[in-house]
Structure formats: C-alpha cells, structure tokens
Image 1 (cartoon, rainbow, N blue to C red):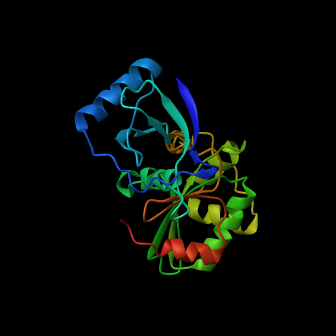
Image 2 (image 1 turned 60 degrees about the vertical axis):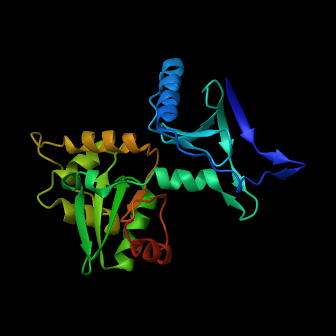
Length: 239
C-alpha cells in the first residue's frame, strides 16, 4: 500500500527530534527483501527513520518510509519543527553524495582555469545556454579544474561528437561554450563512444537536466550557479 505523508499535529507539522530508531541489520535486510519481492525495486539502503516505528528506504535515488513489515510504503517529507529543517531533504543530500573515486574522469573534457587547485565535475550539454553561463562563471571563479562530461540530452549529439573528436577537445569546448564558435566537423571514423558512456553515467545518477554539478565534497547541485555561490561550494572540503 502506497501512502502520501505530510506530518501534521493540531494544524502544525509534527516535531520528531525526540525519537530515533536503533539500527537492526537483520530487519533492514528483511525489509529490503520484502520491498523487492512485492515491487521488483532494488533497495540501496535501509536505516531507522527519525520517527519511532518507521524505517527510511533509499531506492531509485529517492527516500521513502516504511513500517517494519514493509506493507506500507510512505511517500512524503519529515520536518523538524524545532529547527525548521526538512530532514528528508537533508538525508537526500547526504545519500546522493557521489564518491569521486567512482567517476571515470578520463571520459571528461578537462579544462583548467588559473592554477586549477579546486576541482568540480559538470554534466553539460553543448546546446545548453545555462551550461555556457556556468562555464563563464567557472572561468570567472578561477583556480579550478573542470571535468566536463558531455551529456547530450538536447539533440546535440552531432555537435558533441565534433567536440570530443577535435584535435584538442578542451580548446574546442571552450571556444564553443565561451565564444560560440562552432566546432569543425569530425571525421567519419572518429570513436565517440564516450558520449554513450556519459549518457549511461548521467542516467545512473538520475540527471534529467543540465548543467548538473558534482562538487569535491560529493554534493550535487543543479543549474548555473553564480560565481559567488560557486566559490563557496568549490572551497568545501571532501567529507
């Protein structure tokens, strides 16, 4: 049974700070198995929810809540009224962190601005106006190495192929995104299989828009952040 949850008590959102469950590995494994048997969905992680009697389930890059029987699957958000915090959003941010060690950085077009001491990954599209804006903002931020995974979701695969097959892909990328220069046509025999790998990787992360940014601390942010915000996130330390 699928339920939608919005915790309300006497007209106010329910405070849940006083109730935290205790981890039970065997029960967590059993809950995951029950969900898979009834829905066919693979569960990534099960942990106690911040409300007694509920368990947090992370799957398909989303957070759900269940009772210990896994009969009821609850869709919704949990808020802490004392701190005015969306606990579900905080957990999503934490659970969605990307381990940089798992990223195939050799499939990215590497661009360095300044000393390049700070690092960031961007899933980007050659026909994306906001991606061009982000590239200029990263250039303005400076002291950053950008790993651009060309993620062709805007009918841009031909142009993306021209860029990755260029003699100097980084220069072709910068010329196009910063100055609007069209890349030269690629040779017919060019191997552009990296574009398919990038699509598969972006889909794995659940990216449906560009730009999608992965910072050094593993957090994901969508959209063309202004230079000031980029500098704050670029300086964040890895956990």
